[in-house]
Image (tube, rainbow over all chains, first blue to last red; front, side, top):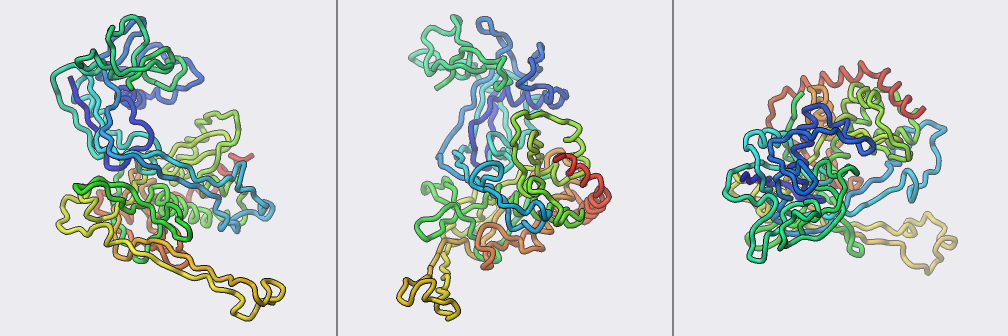
Length: 220
Length: 279
């Protein structure tokens, strides 16, 4: 089993991504197909190859053998990001455009929006994959989560090391196997499955595409 | 094309008042929780959003507006797009890839900063790091430093007064406040990071050309030339940062000159692109 760790140098905004989704996006960019993956278009029939093993569960094929992100969270708080129209630059406008502008609503509305931010020094994923190709793809991933352009989720370094076990879908416990990633809701799930709840969403990347939506179980 | 990592250390040359809100009449400086051996400490920082606007987009775009002769000729939507990134306002969004490619070619600074046209998002390629205060609590980011002061040593406060205009004897008080009316004097105060404090921050220009790197470096030079301010109270002298770039594998002067020459050469096409977006 490969244990991939991201060491963060800045707080994480939003949720950490699935490693397989991250690798698929990186590979899609290298293959030149990323711009063709759109919500309003059918997905290509062939899945994008990533250096992680895939298996089937129930009628769903090509589910990556990779756990959901495991975040070592130390604290959580709220920050804000703001935007306002710089009316101090009104002199740059043409004469006809020097109008009375509503900044409380509509297009030029000022905002100061909250952002939930977490202090997460490390994020780990368990997967079954090839160490070197995984690290090569991750070399171009400099930040993860939301609002990366504002400095959130900056990755200081990636590490990948081999370990015993196969915790990418289920981890053992005395009460029964613990769910480690989103999987299809089907009869093939272990009978005494722990730590899950039912949901409707995706368990295969791209997670945002409607074609991927199905009845799933997610870790909780 | 390559990914450029530009690391900076900025030293406060005047009190930094990058606020997160107010408590009564007092402005509270922005802080983030940092885990230390003695527990969680709340340490001042500079937001990436603020640095992105004040240090990169605003100075760079204002220079382009002057060079392209656009002063007094912009529409409100164009001003909003150039200086603040614009807004997605139309319901039928689409991807005009030619328009995106042309923007990348004609406006290297906008390829870094990105923006939004009314019907299309133009993704940027620049990540701006938040500014980390160089202090004991953030020691994990500065392993080579022996002695670091705790964050509390870098904090202070300020208090200013907005005077009562009546005392100047200029206003007709009987018409405004009356002879026995309440004073118009207002005291306002806040927290600030004191002079001498240093912040470590940086920029990551992903898959950028030397021209785009030059755009970023030129923006930083313009920002410094205009005082290098961040945060509020700049009108009272607050917020001045002296930014020093750590060594990198590029010729800064050559990159900046190449960008300036390139930008001036694209002037007519760039202006035509801007006008075409709002036809």
